[in-house]
Length: 95
Image 1 (cartoon, rainbow, N blue to C red):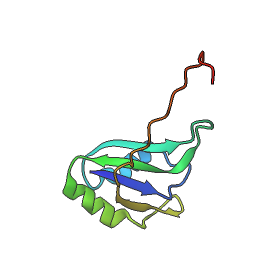
Image 2: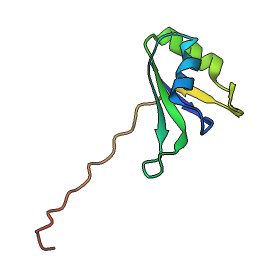
Image 3: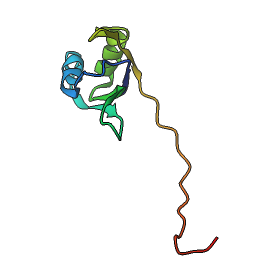
């Protein structure tokens, strides 16, 4: 089960987030989203849990929980919307 975790403390590490969710079951991956240019955390991430029931329990119990002075927003992640394909332009072609 893929879980969205928002309103994270910017100093929270992926290891710490893994520890929090591991209390509810097997965590297969943790990803805190970071700004491409600065490398600074954006305050949200995703946790993948192996078992659907354990994931549901984690969502239910951790939504609103305080971690690092902030109340986390935890819910089942929605599928990423499809983005239109980018057009590539031939650099040698005259327009």
